[in-house]
Image (cartoon, rainbow, N blue to C red; front, side, top):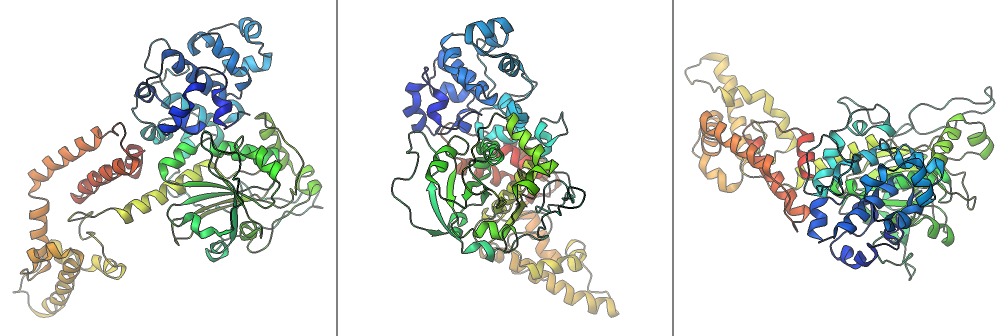
Length: 555
């Protein structure tokens, strides 16, 4: 399996001299390097040879064939030319083994069944130069100008297969999907003719209090080019809650860093780092043992994110509802067909392994929201080698991003449809449906009897709701209104205009949204602010913008 160390990725070829420049420009880890597109390369003034080398090494990294990278790059061939070589030529020129030749010429899926990564890279690394354009990248897709924008486009435009590990379409969760986040795929069953009972697991996501005060220690920082392999000075323990104080985070609880299945899981998750970056989510790997040699083997080859040491095993206990989830090698692996299947999957990915450390304590995964918002998702390794479904991980992270965006956006005048404007208190918002007819239709004073007596108090409440919902600077404009309909009509006329004006403004805003592109050197935060501002204006006219459209544009 290919390493995530940048030094291993660039090798001894023409990219070696670019390391400092790549670091300066922010291309400081392998997953990010692999999504560099033609515009990015031109901005870095890469030569054609360097472009070809990056394309070749990205392809080889996807197919776990980096051992041939230096020799193939020295040949001077482009990827197009290499893919057109015969089996005999690949064997004689580069010494490729027969199985490796078959893997190299397979353009449909990345090695180890991770076709999501392959399909993703096939789109975002599409080259525009004629000399380097190949069949591998010729797909019916539109070119992109930013790696951030290309991420979610790739998630939403490929839907050919149905398997989770074989299709990017699975990253889109269907409406009504229930996120249990407690077990893998199917419930466990008794094994060995009922002699071995399944390990019991909790049925509810752990409370936030179970992880808030866990003490952790950083064993390795987030990997960047030129960084020391480990933190030289021993860091002091810290409260885990500090890690997600400002940004959501994914915590992968590793059973044993030398385990072939744990390494494979970490590798396939970290390979999606650009997507997590675009979603604003941090990545952490948690270990329950501190064996320096094991950490050095694990980071950054299989995992380039931060590595944490959980001495008290707090995260692992939280996964089990306060107790550690354990299983024996014989009952949990040898007599468990699912664990054996997981092992074969990892073995097929070419992962090395060792047997150092304790491997009976089961791991899992947490997705924790920003601040004290709590645990958004939890996955338990019921069988040795179970992986949390990528589709669920990305969907939860997308929802977290949407939640943060809604709570951090500066509201402008009216927000959303009808009375969903600015910041309603929950109590007021639940009362709105009772009074909306009065706001939209109004009522006449000549009404007599019970109807008049009932409508007047309701209309007064509706008017108060509107007055409380607007900023002080806007309140003065509706201060003289005596009915809710009057106030609402004033706001509609001032901020929306008549129907013809609304249509024209909507067309203009939709055009602005469609043509909005990230500029060279522009930060993600600035681009996000522009996109959200346009969406807020569109929604203020009652037009619906789907979550998929928003995420696709922002990323």
